[in-house]
Image (tube, rainbow, N blue to C red; front, top):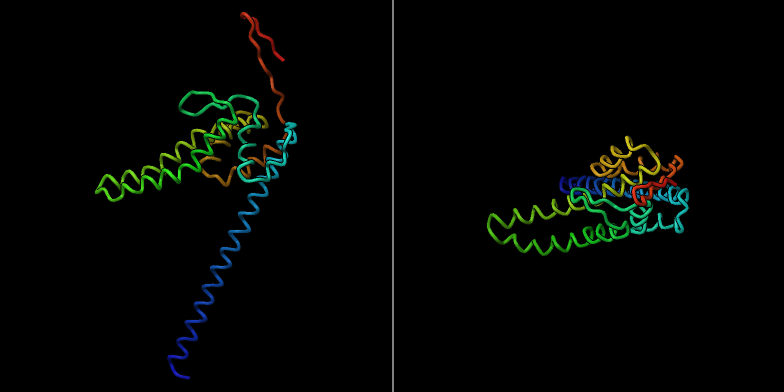
Length: 197
């Protein structure tokens, strides 16, 4: 065997080892992703069941589970920073438009990269604007859902951390789903008289 044969053999082994390493890493990431998805679905399913939702199985379907996250709380969705309340299903559709439309908008703005100086700045600001818009709509969805199962003193930090570090939302959803929903008190005003039920 010549030196070049040994070198090619070593290179092949190194390359196949690297390939095996990459496949192993991808496999581990895939398994973790599936585990996170299943745990989140279990938590949402339990919450929907406890709240008597008609379709708790939606927790297992992509995008339908986000719809469930938005619509489980029985009150209007307050959009952060705009001080505006919208119907919860409308909040989901806004989130979906931001999520799916964000890529389209980013693609459209990528044309600006040919404009010197300002083009790259605009292109780099688009994903930040999309992220901020999603935060404004998603924070209230998480907070309202958590408030149905845990105290407000816990719900607010849970929602904030769920937005900043999304993987933690699974842990917080599991914590909340292990508790019974808090009783809802509705207040009705009639000519200055308040009725609680």
